Image 1 (tube, rainbow, N blue to C red):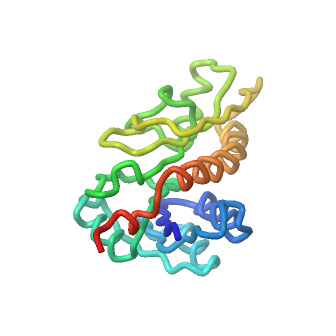
Image 2: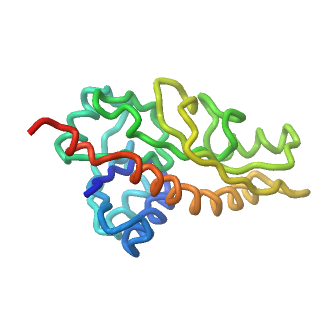
Length: 196
């Protein structure tokens, strides 16, 4: 069984999307959400409860030791950032097991401050004709880890940050489950790697 932790800071829409895929076994029968961590009390906390998960609210930037202790306590195999807005310090043993989805085509429009509407404003300001989303492995930097999957969508004449965001999010709803399926096939459960 692959036990997932979902980390959120906002609306929880991505959490809902992933939970629906898991509930309908679109990611296989051996995947479950075991933990939801929120960086603050947010709408996503309410959505988590509606889905049957009691979110663990952990404000501030978590040290690798603090995050690692929580993940180990819940026997987490894979961590998915779902609109989580704090820098993640990778705990020992979770290298390659923390994943993020970014609302742009990295390496463009990544880094500190590039989140939410800021990303879409930057895409429109540069005049790009194509945008999209990127699922990537988290490393020590901001949006610099290895890319797992990207999906694209057109930037249309007259787009606002809001209309572009909606089109990109539709691609995110496809990209994250697809990337997760790939990662689950490639990574054994973390518990299987621990000594008996």
